[in-house]
Length: 323
Image 1 (cartoon, rainbow, N blue to C red):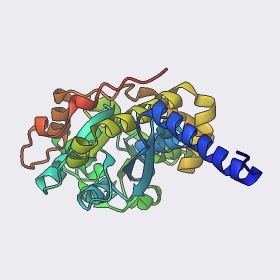
Image 2: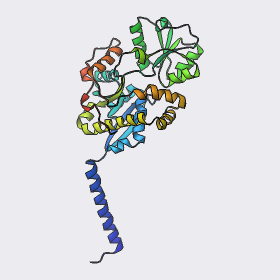
Image 3: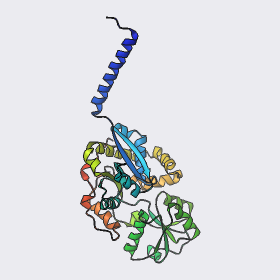
Image 4: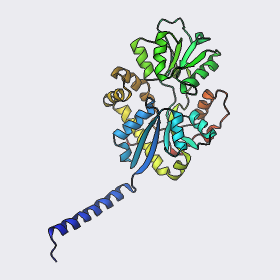
């Protein structure tokens, strides 16, 4: 039986499509799974990890369709999970604990860092304040009540047995108020801390990564229901994220300019952030109860005592990545 060209073309394309679909299905074993990732502020380093993982096609490699949304804070990202608008978020046990107390069922599923890299107390260059103890009765700028800067301020008061006036001025108000003399010191975060030092507008009084014990400072937290129903997808998403970390660590020449552009900072400052932060990130996300508990101890600040065991799920780590 003869077949016209149009009929042949139609049949042939259909057969090719069927073969391609079969090959694709056989190769991956499943279609791409969607995971909605809430990023707790753009400036926090986990956001850049997720962005690089997306840009490099690593999520796609693991059959994950990642939808990244940047929020204004960890609390806002947690609210997104509570509202069913996110499945995974950048977080730490303190935020997770607050969430569970409020009825938001979320747990840490992977760790990124054990230190507050680049978080510092800074004073004016010519300030007479020489030690942390000298901050007593002085005005210290924080971003807002309940923020990480506020938690660190409370830790300093408890650790050094001093009291000072913590004044919320917002992230944008820290440097101008330090320069003008309205504040005697500020608790400041990276990469802004590196920029202030580079510009000569502040002197580092202490770096929290040097004075605080190791703890689970940053990582990934997942909605309990999502983790239970989509365990394989979550594991693949975490594998992709830690392959993203490996890419960042292994390609400084390519990554540093991207980091500078992403954060809106100079390449020189980006180099500092790359070395001081990204160079120390976990390779496999593995957590321990001790690290989770230490975070709770550091940031308790008189809150209800929480059980570290209910705040993390270690079944997703260590992550095995291709090198």
